[in-house]
Length: 274
Image (cartoon, rainbow, N blue to C red; front, side, top):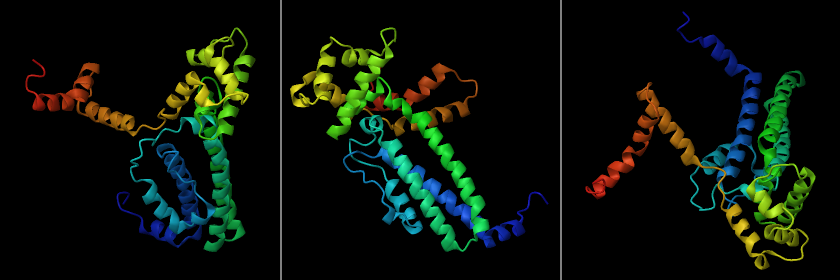
């Protein structure tokens, strides 16, 4: 019967070392994405980079519980300077290398033969290439204008200066016919006050305390959010509203979105909508 579970298939999988080898591979890939998520939602002041010593299979379960706890630091999710400085892409190479080494060791400990390990490692290599390509595609824009300017707010002076130099060079290489964001024009166009201060900072002639306009940019860059869970929760709530009313429009969605705040306002002050 097609509606009944095939116990034989499940039993064969449980007894198969290849099945558990693939399970380990998926577990390691899941760890990689967990670390990426943790990096994005954590803060630059409390986040600790993972080390090879804490990457055993037992510790991965512990790390999952620790890293999925809601962070209370007000700097959580404010990772724009690190992304512009190329930190995530740099860590991606290190973490994927760590994943490959760990997988090879754990498959050997599991007792798989070289012939059985080959397809698992081959599939992992394909996944690794796909992750590498996807990350370069999705995050390389941080190294372009105007996003590279967020790197000026990096907590490491050397990286902040490198981002400043790159921003100026990108503007020069773009030519006079290129169209730029207003932030790019404010800090990269020769003759502007922002450019003068950025050039002084990039050439190490002056530092932020003596550059008021650039200091304002740095402050805003450091406080820029790149991970906002409330946006995702709002999308989920909107989806829930539409499921209850398939023919609903923008007015219906706006009303349901503001219904609870309106109810709270009326409860606190019945005359608030008078």
